[in-house]
View 1 (tube, rainbow, N blue to C red):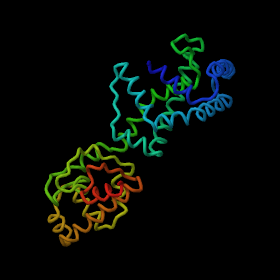
View 2 (cartoon, rainbow, N blue to C red):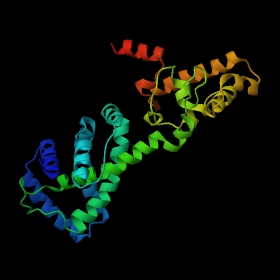
View 3 (cartoon, rainbow, N blue to C red):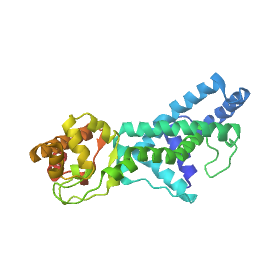
View 4 (cartoon, rainbow, N blue to C red):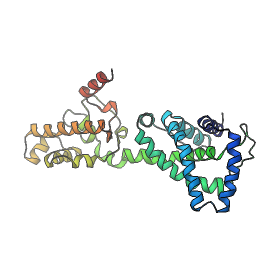
Length: 282
């Protein structure tokens, strides 16, 4: 089925009234809005109603993954590469806050594009004669949101990953006690993963700033690549104190993960934490 037809079907399934009746009402509404130049209080009321009616549909499509699937299909049909990482898909299914963040960004962009294309440029055609006939304004708006999803998703993903920051912070040399960056703080020997798999909703520095000055100094030197003995010498503290600071901060990161301030993929968990989570899940 063509992407536009799938979108129209999703909207029809999500709205209780008859599509033909919606289109007839939309024609009259567009005439009224055109009289005011698609702006002003009357248009603002129309926008609010559009958002109110389509928000549950869009949230549901984000939650079940159909919105992302349709976006990938639509862009790939037009030769524009777009792919959603499976970890991101899982996060959007599980995290309402993540869905809301993307939804708001997507809607803001879609409102501008919808007004320009569907109304001012008159691209919405109530007399369209496709396989499913004409689509209502809600279908057009949902389709516009799906176009905007790629931009909103990429912005969301990049903001969480903090690519440049993590590239500097996530080096890992594979030696026990000598790991650097976030990977070195989280991983036990033998656990390997790509640094870009880490996703943050809170800056690493913000979490670090909440710690004691000594812990901040230890972690700061750790992410710069110093091993425990070097850190102990520089700070004039014992090797055990260095390990204690790192252990406490690791616990803080896991607590932040439980509070959804930071997300740690399972492959980065230390074995003890991983086994504990597996037991809890069972």
